[in-house]
Length: 536
Ligand code: GLN
Image (tube, rainbow, N blue to C red):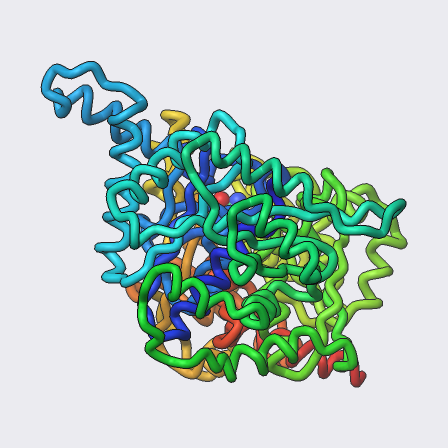
């Protein structure tokens, strides 16, 4: 079922095999028909994760990058939409030589071709392919069939790992294996036999249940791996090793062990993240994707949350993240604004559209005037500049043309090349996307944090700071500490340390490149300021 943790299992297997000395690539298969994840509302599908290349992908790709500690490429992600799009395009070009084009074999072949292409692109020894959805769905059946055929063609080189949930009904207090037995049988009806079962459950499996599953599911007890609930997903690979998962996988794939798994740095990091005794630093995220309740909300800002955690762990702190609904502040709720004083830092993350925007601007003004550390990500930088223009430069009607087409003072404006896309309602994959370089100004907070002159960060936006206002904003005290190398695009805005302990915004999304073993310098710098704030 969705949410059971397939993404964490996939990421963990990748990390463990990498640790064993193999080069690994991870492929995410999303059965939905969207060509990419860029057009989906984050409250419905979680955040959109942008690859270095600019491809807008599922949030699981973020976990893959964070576990493997490397960039992934376009080949590592596929959706049904992508697969069908290429099959249909090939058909239009007579690429099938007059044949009747069908789901089987043509769509299935395209899926297999993409799995090969991903491995080739990465030059990897092992591919771990995560098939999204639930056994029995119509949507993912072709992907499972492609996997079946892979096994038929390479019987010794393919193993199937099934992630299943074992409930412990509170009225019984006993773990039930029956749903998993049925799931395995359902998978059998596709012609696929699970080689491994990852048993997601509140607690580890006992021997009795392992034996029960082994006999009823045709899976060796050594290949039934406990996946109990944990405090942080970063403990998952360590838990799997308790059941010797990586050794069993190599065994099943008939691959020799090249190295012992030590995971020294990872263990240290996972312990730091889980350390409940660390001093607490309290951060408010002021955003708008809170409508669907706590359940989905953390997914909408997943990379931001993780980036905060990594930097907090590095500083020996525990981050307490609170969600502040920008709409409550916008509606004039005085308490909602005053309550911001309880935190040691405020983040306004990426966003689109009008809803909650005046609330965010009020929160930014609060952070600036009360000298509370503020970190603006993309929209959070644009709004920081709008706030500055309105309340410091006195340009009362300063706005972004995203909200007010004919704004009196359009300090944030549509990028030149974006107009043609919007005129044609061509929204999919047309933003300024992916990694672009920026040059940093000496003596600024940004330059001090990165400790280098040039950086590369990932973007996802259509609007930018309007250059007509740059001189005025700088004369008014704002510093553009990062720009595109030609100086034309404002990439980082900040207030000097003499004016404010940490008031900085980025046009890019630094959270997309924060990694457990390589926390992002700007998040670390922001949290350092927040820790200082606590002392005050
Ligand atoms: N809506 C803004 C833009 O398109 C900011 C986008 C974002 O925060 N990712 O420029």
